[in-house]
Image (tube, rainbow, N blue to C red; front, side, top):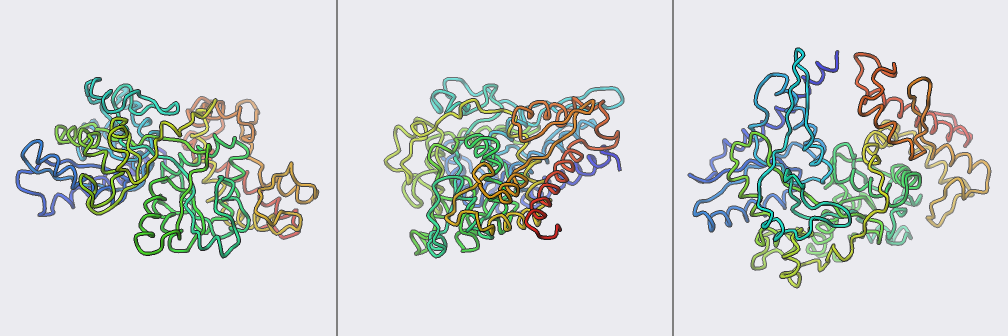
Length: 515
C-alpha cells in the first residue's frame, strides 16, 4: 500500500476521531437555549475542563448577558491531536475542500506542538500546489498583550507567538512525582535529580509515558537531554526505561500509578504531579505522594491556546481566549478550590502566565512560586534535539522493551555495579566486562547517509545533518529508501535494529543467551 493511500486512510480515521465527540456532545440536551457555543479540542484533564467551562460560562454571562457552553473534544494527547489536525488539513487540501470547520480552538499542550501547527502544510495535486495552516492568527491589540504578559519571554522562550497564532495560558515545568512510602520501604532517598529515575533499585517501579503520544512528556525528555547533555541524558532515559513497569499512552497515568503504589517514581509535568499530591493529601494521606522539580535542571514552557482554521464560532472562541488570559481565568490556575474567585471543585496547581496576576494575587496562590525568578535559560540549546526524542525513544524503549529490561537487569546484577543507587557509565567502570556491557548498553545506532557515509547518533553534532536528510527529505535522491517507503518508518527501523544489536551484545557479554 502506497504512503499516499495510507495517508488518506489515516486522514479519514483522524477526521472521524475529531468529529465523533463533537457530534455526540451536540446531541446533548444540556446546552442552554440561546447559549454562545465554543468547540474546543484539548488534551487537558477533566479537572481543567470542568473549571474552565464553568468559569467561562459565568464570565460570559456577566460580560455579555447570555450563557455560554463549552463543547469539549478529547481525541488524545497533544502530539496525537497535532497529527490528527495535520492529517485533516492535508486531506482537505487533496480533496479541494475548506480545511477545518469542526472545532474552534485548540487548548493545551506544549509550545512545540503549537509551533508545528503554525507551519504551512503543502500538497501537490495534479501539478498544482495547495497550502494552508491549521492555526490562524488573532489580531489582539499589542497594548492588551503587554498588559497580560509584560515582556514576551521567560528563560529564552516566548510566551505567545509573535505572529499571534497561539497564546500561552499557563506555564509548565517538568519533574518527578514519587511515592514517599514506597521509597522509604525500599530504602531509596527521595528524588532530587533526573538520575534518580536511573536507580537500579527501582526496577519495575518507574512509570513513564510514550512521548509519541504526549507532547508534555516529549518536552520533559527534551529538557533532560538539554540539561544533562545528549549522551548522559539518553543514559538516564535508557535506564529509566529499563526500570519502567509500564509505558503509558497519556500524561495523567504516571501520577495515578505513583499514588496507587503501582510505581515509586515517574516523569511528569508539574501540575499533574502537584494535583495528585494535593488529591492524596485531601484524601487523608498527606506526605504519601511528593513532587519535585530538579533544581536548575528543569525548563519552563508555555501551555497555549489557539484558534483553528475554519472555526465555526470565531467570536465566542476569541472571547474564550480573552477569558483564559483575564484575571478571572488566570486565578483558576492557582486559587484554592472553593475560595472566592477560585475554582469551584479542584485546585488545579498550575502556574499562571500573566505577570499582572502574580503582582496582585500571589498571596492567594496555593503555590507561591514566581517562575520569572526561578527560570533559567538553557545555554546553547540544540534546536535539533526535540526532533529525535520520539524516534529514538520508541525504537529503544518500546520496540525493544523486553531486550532493554533484560540487558539493564543483567548490568544492575553485575557484582561490580554500585548498590547505592549511583548511576554508573562505562567510563566509571573498572571491571572490564561491566565496562564492555555499559559501552554496548549506552551505544547509539549508526545511520546511513549519501554515498556510503554513516552518522553515529552518539555524536550530537550529527543531528542537524541527519534531521535534514532523513526527516526533511534532503536525501530523497540518495537511494536510502524506496519510492513507496515512508522515510520516517525506514529511519525508525534502522534505529530499532541498531538498538536491538547493542542490547543483544550486552546479554552476550553477560554470558546469557541472546533473546
